[in-house]
Structure formats: C-alpha cells, structure tokens
Amino acid sequence: MDGRFGFSAFKVTHIGPDGVTIEANGAGTHLESGVSPGGTAALNGISVRVGSVHGGTADLSISHR
Image 1 (tube, helix red, strand yellow):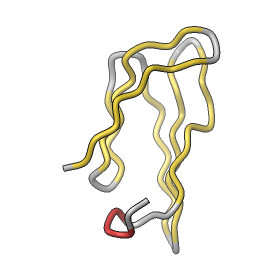
Image 2 (cartoon, one colour):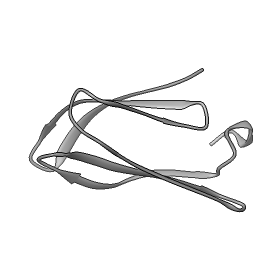
Image 3 (spheres, helix red, strand yellow):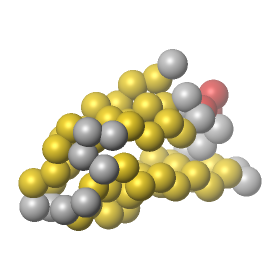
C-alpha cells in the first residue's frame, strides 16, 4: 500500500454469505470494516465496494479518493 493511506497491509479476512471483513494495518493503525453485498467501506481514503459474494469468493471494486 502507498504510505499516504496510513497503513502498509490491506486484506480481506473473512468472506461469508452476509459479506466480507476488511482489515488495514500500519504503524499505530488498525482499521476493520464489515461490508454487505452492495455496500461500500471507506478506510483512510480507500473505498472498497462489495459487488457480490458467491461461496468463498467476493467481487470487490477498490478505488481511492
């Protein structure tokens, strides 16, 4: 990850029928968000939209402001 977002690691930690859990970690920073299909999470300028979830796979769109 680009340091300007305040974290160095960004990952999906859970995919389930109700959505996904996303974590972002860095020096002194821990952000976590649960997102349902069709929803969007914002983590320090990174937006993650969950399009759909099928089994253990999620369709994500990731962008920055």
